[in-house]
Image (cartoon, rainbow, N blue to C red; front, side, top):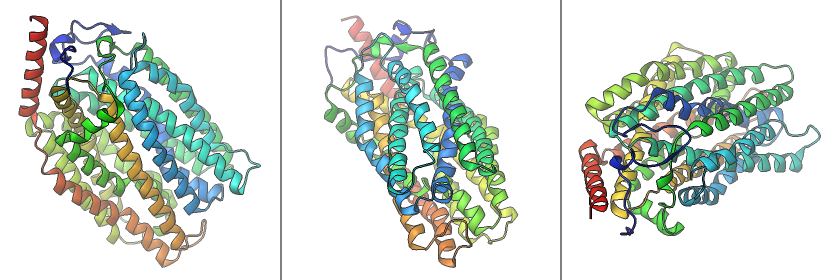
Length: 475
């Protein structure tokens, strides 16, 4: 319920609100300064770099280099995700409620920098003397540190992005730029993958890449956080209790539908990056195509993101996201029938996935930000952290289930590292890479067609919030 003694924060009060470190735009309806956008997005260069290496290669590194069984590694991924059932809500709720001279978001971002860098190094450099159960325990502990520190950064940083702009289209621009800069980071991740995958001493290469990546992540987080503005008047405006905060997220009809769609999609797509090396080496017998295929996925992200930002003003964010999901469903499904030998269709489908993925990455976070304003209208609270926590939990929980499925499916299909695979193992890899994500995106598309919170409804919400603010200032 709303707190009548607590005036809601609106677009009109931003200009008057005190801030931390730097200058915010005079009014959130104005365009955000490009320097501010770059400052906000910079850490995604390092996080994207090591995140891609994590997603693409950690599973294969663990099975083929460290000698850990696929099912065991799948369980570790799953357990680390399920830990987020505790850490994500905790970080979201506490971030919303934090009171600090550094800001309720920036204090968390500062604190996460060094643990996140340490977690990156620990994941890729287990002591050479460890084996068997001790090695599995090391990787489990490293995953726990990495995921916890990632949560402590990711949720407050995402919440701060929602706070930087309340204008309907400016949010799309902010998150569109973030996607482009993240894509640059992912491209650096391709370089890191090439270095590690082609090194004579894989473990030594992984260690040095993780050290460099960890230092980049820590440095960019600290640099960015020191220069980002944050509204001090938002402190203390989170939910009054943890349970009620997350209950409000689920009660929000627009958020509830998005969570269902997001969970279905994430379940289907979570194992894709880790399966690319398996697909190219064991199904296509062309390991050297791994980087070119991923590059074909990234190039459309750079080229078309400005187009999606502009097009969303004309056709709406929902239409952009529906297009993204539909093309993604068809493209993934088509991978099931591509021939085992390399062909041009592999690169065409990868390009289509990149085109569609870029559209979704621009529209989805902006839509999520809009429905947080709807929550403020209903509750009088600003719970960006709680919303980001729930979405992050859904993403990781679905990813955990997919990791279990992937690990056990490979194990049951008698997958054997570094050898020619059986027809059953090849079929399982194809299924996991094509029909599973394709089917999930198809279902998600049909459900998302019911989403109704558009620009006009968001304008009504902002208008009512602004009217409340004027009434509170002039009783």
